[in-house]
Image (tube, rainbow, N blue to C red; front, side):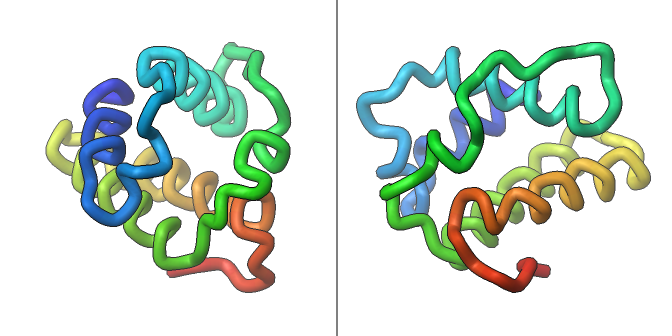
Amino acid sequence: MIVEFIERVSQDMVVGFFFKGHDLARIADREYQLAAERMGGPVTYGGRPVGAVHKGLGINKGHLRRRLAILKFVLTSHGVDDGVMERWLTHERGLESEITNARECVE
């Protein structure tokens, strides 16, 4: 599921360019680690701080909204429980200030 999500965002017309030239398998692994750790799973995130990874990329709220829409589509298509999906999306929204420097959370 995470691999599918990363494949979809990397091929997306709006946000795909952020992934060009990057190791998608590594990104998927870090994505899994971060989400699992922050949602209370027995996994430890082994990547760099989220803010440091995204600093200087020019990610805006629209990019984040697109990412959230793709994530929601993938989670829904895999039949993920609504409660789990909402926790995951809430986790992702909570990263906004670290990756966009925005002050308000996207819906």
